[in-house]
Image (cartoon, rainbow, N blue to C red):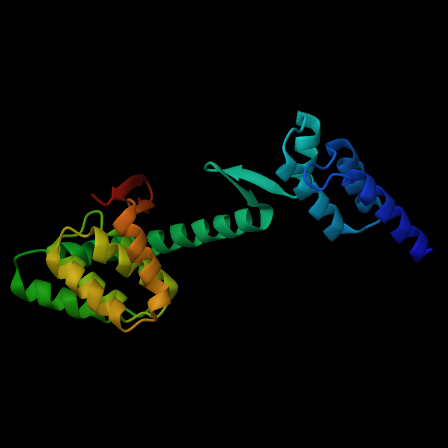
Amino acid sequence: AADGKLAGYRALRDAAQSNPALPNPKLLRELARWCVKADWEDAAKLHYAQLLNGGRLDPETFGEAIKRLDLHYVQGKWISGEEMKSREERDRNIETALRKWRPQLKKLQQAIDSDAYSLRERAIREFQALDDPQVIIAIASFQLDGGDRFCEEAAKLLSKFPQTESTDALVRFAVLSPFAGARIAALAGLKDRPLHEYVPQLLSALTAPLQSQFSFVVGRSEEHTSELQSP
């Protein structure tokens, strides 16, 4: 039975791909459907992907292939359902971190950027003592509204976290910050990290604008979305 099934598959495949450079879309769809019925999910996905790569599809066939491959059009790109779920989870984590940490960090930022020496020094000590990795995203968001002292302290604190999110934030401070102290501190924090973690981003920033978008909620009612772009 297995041999007969394989022979049937090969016959359909050879007919659909009689011209490898230009497979027959109708026969290729029949082959993909045959694989679905045979519970050959991997083979079915392969042939539906071939359909999409070949082009010249009617809307019904295109929709069928997209559905079977679990593809979703998000922000100008096709991504898998798995990646979409991962992005949604990441966005939820970002929102949770910002809701938890931004109000507290805002108070510290205002103190650190103030001219009151004793208040500033106390706030810096409290700020530098933070060790919850969830604070990374919230710190990075202050690139939008932090002053020169706070941004420099932010880069120094980010340097203490080994997480990838911290590396990404340091790259943004190194490239986008208008404050020299923050840029220098960020570059110093990157020097001790593996080159492959940050060099590609730095090189990309030299050839194309590096963008960073934050959506965050301050308190429970104010929502703010801003975008930074390098010159």
